Length: 337
Image (cartoon, rainbow, N blue to C red; front, top):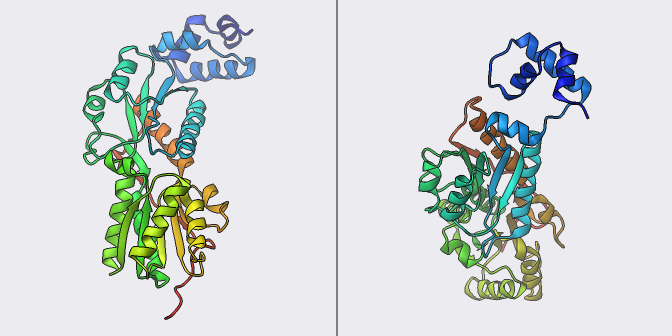
C-alpha cells in the first residue's frame, strides 16, 4: 500500500507538504502542488478517508433528506436518490439517506452529530416547516423543490408550473376544449407539496387562458381509484376529450379504465402526462409527456451544493429547468364534430 511518505519521496518534498497539498490547510506553491498531485497519480495513492476528514474538519458525506411519505411514488423518488448518490461520488462524497418523516427533529439530529457536511432536501412543501431551521443551521443546503418563500435558500427543480401549462397548451393546439387533470393522491395536496401544487397552478392558468373547460381530480395510486376517477370524469364531463395525468402509478390503469368504458386512446381521448420518459415510453399506448429530469436535477443539485461547500463560483438561489414535451402515440387532433 502506497503511503504518504512514498509520495513525499517521489515528489521530493516532506510528508507535511503532501499533507498540506491534500488538506489545503497551509499555502504551498502551485509548482509544488502540481508535483505532489502528479506523484499521487503516478503512485496511485489514496488518502485514508478518516485522515482526510480529520485534516479538513469535514466528513465528505452529504445527507439526502427524502422522507418517504404516503402518496409519494417511491420509484421516481429513488431515481432522484440514485442521481444524487452518483453525482456525489464524482466529488468523492458519500450520501446518507434520511427517509423517515422526522421533519425538523431529523435535521437537528444530523446537524448536532456533525455526521454530514451539507444537506439536499426533497419533498418540499409550500409552507415547509423545516425552512426556519434550515436557515439557522450552519450547514450548506440545497432544496429540490420550491417553497412559497424561498428567499435566502438555494432551490432547484423542474418548472412544474410551466410543465402543467405545456401539457394543456398541447391539448388545446390539437383542438381539445374539455380537459381534466388527474393528479397526485389527495394527501399530497393536503400537505401542500410544492411540485403538485405548481402543476395544478399551471394547468388551471393555461386552461383559463385558452378558454377551456377544465377540472382537477386527485387520485389515489391504485387501479381501483383510477377506475373510479375515469367513471366520474365521463359522468360529469361527457364532452371530455383531453386528460393531463400527474400520477405515474395510475397511467396504465387509467388508460385501461377508459378503454373498458368505451373510450379509445387516442381515438376518443388524448392523454398527456408529467412523468419520467421510461414510464411514458413503456405503456400500452406510449404517452405524450413532459419528462421529469431526475438525473439532471440530481447532478445540478450536487454541483450547487459543492459550490456552496467549497465557496467556489456563483450559486443562484433559484434554478428552474424548463419543461420538455415529447410527442408520442397518446395524442391526436380532436375529430371535427
